[in-house]
Image 1 (spheres, rainbow, N blue to C red):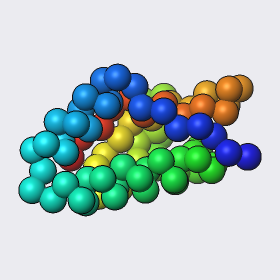
Image 2 (cartoon, rainbow, N blue to C red):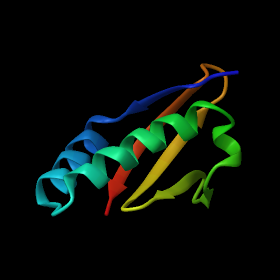
Image 3 (cartoon, rainbow, N blue to C red):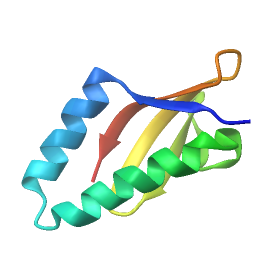
Length: 81
């Protein structure tokens, strides 16, 4: 079953800041795409538990995400490099 991956407004702003400051914007864009792809299927098996949510690393990005299994939704809540 496939989940829909969304990025909160805060996470979108953080991603934009990381991308603008990065010397390798391509790596940031590829990592963002990889995160979206990974979390579409079995997001509960990706990353590690993190204060009630999950933490996933896709270098150079780190993201915290929340899973809503009833709605088949994954929300990226925070992102940093």
